Figure 1 (spheres, helix red, strand yellow):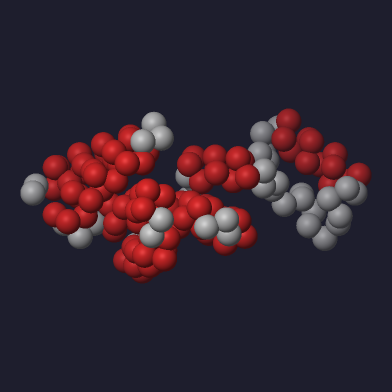
Figure 2: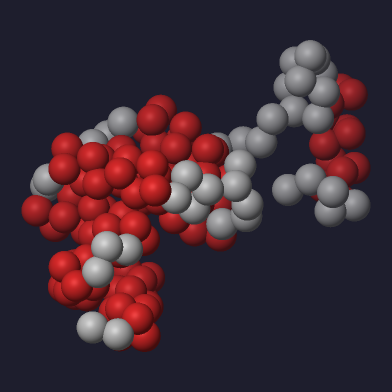
Length: 148
């Protein structure tokens, strides 16, 4: 298999995931993973097998293997977090998503965190969130688009 065929399989798989068709994506990622050792394909495959076949333990192991090979790739943290959500382990999912954001912006991770209703930290973390200074500084920074 040529490198471009592998990239096409991964691209088709991620598009199927975006459309919500995990089963179709599973087929693309299986073909990509069996033809070449690609950590991204393996990570996406891990999420798909966890969702479609219930193999969450294997999915976590594969995501962690991908993380060892590419520790700064936020996609692996996204897929690991999604597996934890399948397992109803919200705390580990959030931890994984936040870890992934440390390596750069990722709209899919941000979307997952937004869907979970995660709030950003207060402007002044040493004060309570309800403190008037935190409240109005947060509003001001949001207006100025310096804080999301």
